[in-house]
View 1 (spheres, rainbow, N blue to C red):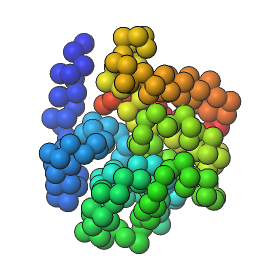
View 2 (tube, rainbow, N blue to C red; view 1 turned 120 degrees about the vertical axis):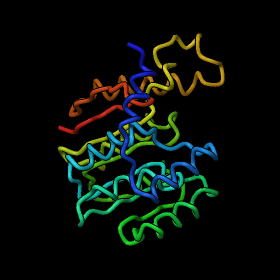
View 3 (cartoon, one colour; view 1 turned 180 degrees about the horizontal axis):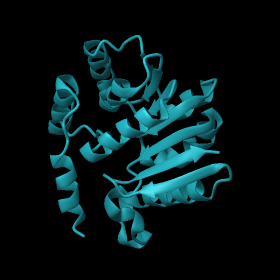
Length: 212
C-alpha cells in the first residue's frame, strides 16, 4: 500500500474547517509553523466530538490552530487550557482566539509546560500533546496525574516521519536523543498500568491512550 497516495486521497475528502481555521492553516504552513497535519486534524476533531470533554488540556498552542479545531466540536460548556512556551507565536494565537470569539473559552498559559503542568489542579477529560517531542516522556507523570479515569490522551507526531522504527545509529546524530526519548515514551504508554494505548499510523503518528 502506498501510504503517501492514501494520505493524499484522505486529504482530498477534507471539507475544510471554516474560513478562519483554513486561513490560519494556510498561513502557518506558508511560514513553516508546525501545526497538526490535515488528516490528523480530522481525527482530532472526531475524537473530541466522541469524548465530549468538559475540560481540555493542550500542550503546545503554536498559533492556536488545533485549539480552535477542538473548540469547534467541543460541548458548549467546555473549556480549553492551552500551554505555549515560544513567545513569538503567543500574540498571534491570542489574536486568532479573539477572531474566533473564543477568548472566554480558551485560556492560554505562557511558559514552560514542565513547570506549568505541576501547578495545574483538578482533572481533564481530554489532553492533546503536540509540543517538544523529546519532552513527552518527562511530562507523562504530570499528565497522568491530571487525567480522570476514562480520560483520553492524544499524543501527536510520535512516529517522527518513520524514524521511530530505525535503529538509533540510522538516525541523524542530532536527532538521536529525541528518537530515544520517543521510543521510551511509546514503550511506557503501551506498558503503563492503568493505560490502554493504541499507536495509529495517521499523519506523523498518533498515540491514543485511555486511562482505565
